[in-house]
View: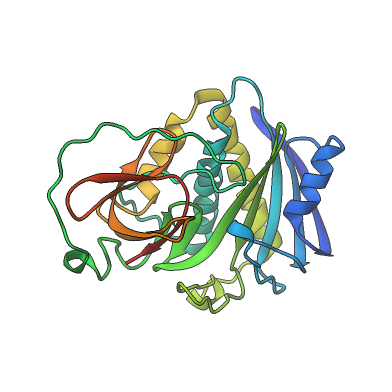
Length: 287
């Protein structure tokens, strides 16, 4: 399928019955000159993966797709493509769920292989808190579609979709997995699917909606900068004050309240004593 809409990049969507990983396939294609706007969808994956090399369960009926972006010298930071992908996925899911509840929040950062520089903004003093005071829904309203730092989309507080960014030179491959018909039993967090909530959608139809949304937001990211994408995130992400637990790459675990993100998308937690901690990478869980 190929479509063009003014400033929106032409889309090329190819579907295969089975592959190891759509991300791996597009990374290989990038080496041989594959163009921006290429999408690859697989009915099944045999070696799908998520962040930190985790296996991604890939039964038929869910979405397994990747797309390619070619970076330009005038583009915003490559890390912020995670924001573009998140906004597009949330929009596509909301089309089918039919509910767009607006909550304040901020943007997640880059979830790919390459670390990005982060700098925390200045902050005013905050009142101390304890996890017990906010544990429960943590200020995160049950119900609805929400984005969670760094790369998850939640439905009713359970994981519905994930995003994986990988970079090779000027090529960024963005992998998106969404639980449409099935969802796994995860050991560390709840998961759900659209089917489990009474919504039936074919992967091809979902990807048509997602690809259009991604192309539109990519064009705005490239033409207008990060601001409109950030504004969308402010409406769609989990709210400031949400209680979170962050497991850092060195194994340390930090609990705090979501207190926004710095200008490059790093997570800011307000700790029990009122101080702020900037998290550049790690696994984050709702408390």
